[in-house]
Length: 281
Image (cartoon, rainbow, N blue to C red; front, side, top):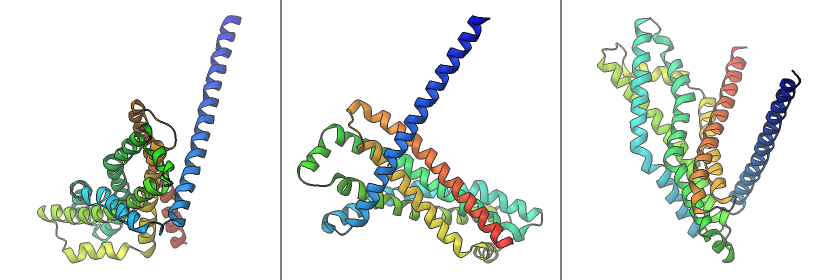
């Protein structure tokens, strides 16, 4: 009996120590990531016009990489989203006599939730992992130290263009994906013989949209882009890496980005609910 109690106490102690180490590690990582985010934001604001002839073309290049090059796959996912959600929901509402609520459903599902999140995840999978590999390899090969030796701020040269490029790209791709989803969904529903004219369909959506939807959509997508860019740049630059450590850093960055995107999405859900309750009362 005493051995069993001692064993249980030892197991509980090991679990407590493990939990303490995990909590301490999470706190340290969160602190380091927050400090890196503040540094990146400060450098972006204070040095935006510094070396503009060099930096502005780099920002345009990153927008092209994270945005323009993703237009085909974004169109594909937007069409799939429209076919799966819009194309199925609109005929169902028409059959149940709820055609007046189609716009509300489309705005809630596509504009507020799935559109921004899908665009952010596309950018993360396609571009976020590339950034970790690029910066991690540069750090492992000593290129970051070489920039510092030349008097070049690595955060300004390596992080700021990627940060701004990803924020703009996520915003633009979200709008593009939403428009494609609406168009593809209506086309699919039209082919099914839905008795709803395009003017009525898009008029309902426009009638449901409010000014705060546009503001929150912009804030949400920019937050997604900022969070993803900061995390992937942090994992690539924040600590010395060897070449064999780059894949592990990439995996860790993807996991943290997914967690952060879900938390940001949950935060905006609360904001939307608060605004809806405020309008109701």
